Amino acid sequence: MNALTTLLGTEFPLIQAPMAGVQGAALAVAVSNAGALGSLPCATLSPDAMDRELAALAAGTQRPYNVNFFCHAQPEADEAREAAWRAWLTTYYHEAGLDIDTVPAGAGRVPFNRAALDILERFRPKVVSFHFGLPDLDLLDRVKGWGAVVLSSATTVEEARWLEAFGVDAVIAQGIEAGGHRGMFLSDDLTTQTGTFALLPQIVAAVSVPVIAAGGIADASGVAAAMALGASGVQVGTSFLCCTEATTSALHRAALQSEAAHHTALTHLFTGRPARGIVNRVMRELGPMNPVAPAFPLATAAIAPLRSHWEAKGSGDFSPLWSGQNASGCREVPAAQLVNELVQGFNARPATR
Image (cartoon, rainbow, N blue to C red; front, side, top):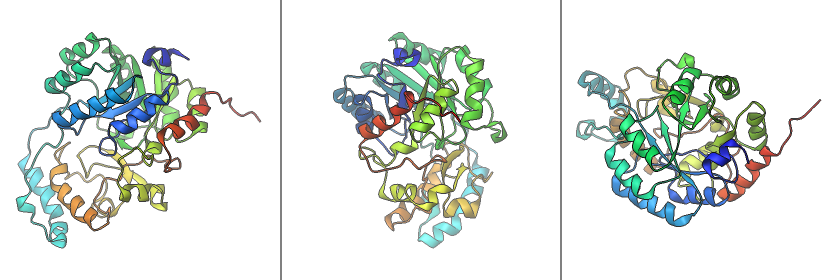
């Protein structure tokens, strides 16, 4: 027990990272029932799907769980940039026998809004977390109004201070090793991004709320190292991707357990925001950070048909194979087993020479 477990109401200060597209309620239920904090990502869910997943989560566990949302600003459509992006992809469309002119542009993902909040409020989860900063204050006040604990990711000391000033109850220190989307929101300059074990002690020293370490933590020794540097808890994502309760595709699971997982990079080709994934054909050929890609989340529309086409043929060449830099913990095991292994790190003492 520590300040974070008291805040979250969990047995262990361990959070399963919310991972949109590779999990539903089942993984969160298994993690929460094992004594950690399971998380449900809602960034890509329609209102009906969100309602169903929340109902399954609430029915599956009596323990605390976390519900996660993106809170990005929706970009304005940029026809010239969209046309340039489609021009870059045209050769791939021809290779696949697809017609790029039939693909509608679209936002793909919407930020946390009143419609989502109306659904969420019926369930009143113990914990609500955000990525890319925080939502408008009127929405945040409603979340806090039922007593929810609010978490959000910081990728710099400045972001951590900003989050504390706007009322978060704990900060997730997201190192550059982490898989999936960077939580950066005060700047889009990737040179500001640092590793977990450089970032963590700086944020611990800068804020008074509990700090949760995230990025590159794959096993009990990583948990112990984070706690030794002042973390109040840890968040683990990549290691849960191959758990039996995850919905990670067979292609993605195979990549995570292959030599390919040793080479990851930050890319915005798939969504328009930097996110870490296993390097594949489209990242190598277009460059992982191609400035032509539209702003988040507008890049998704034109690349999604290529992903679907090649996945149907057994190829992940155009798929976002999200992974952190340390995929060594990815195994086909029940989530409860992984939780039990990870929490051994909370009792470990640093090795001495």
